[in-house]
Image (cartoon, rainbow, N blue to C red; front, top):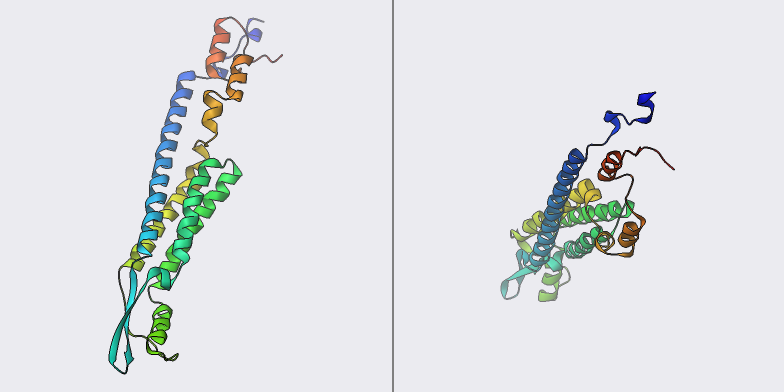
Length: 223
């Protein structure tokens, strides 16, 4: 019959719609990638900066009166700094990884941000570092800091860590659409790309299907 050798119009892919969808997906992927890189890099940088600032202040009594003490974030807890470094490494690794590996690295990035934020919040009220300084200052191992106060820096650290967390969540949600570092070489001029060009047209590409139809061929036929 006449219709048996023809391809149904409904089964022919629409190249314009396909290209538009791919362009929209690529644009969305680039935006989410840029947002994740920005949030992760800024968050890690601020965590590293804020951890070096004074987090807690207090006084200790001695024979000469009260002595003021202060402790930087690094003395209170080193966890935010360590996790910020891990987050930076994961931010780079998430671009190099592919498939399930990318999700694992994205999860590590997310956990780094969450852990750094939790450690900063807990460190805001931790007096252990000042108690140690009080004992060294007075020579009395039983000395404890008094009038403990906190600066804003622990909360700045925690807020910056939440930016790392947000970068990780973006990577978990949209990372599958992000390009990999090694992918550009293969697409533009690497051995795989050149081999693909030498092998001829891809029968699964909408453009090639339309060209086959114009030549009067059945693009759905498989040899």
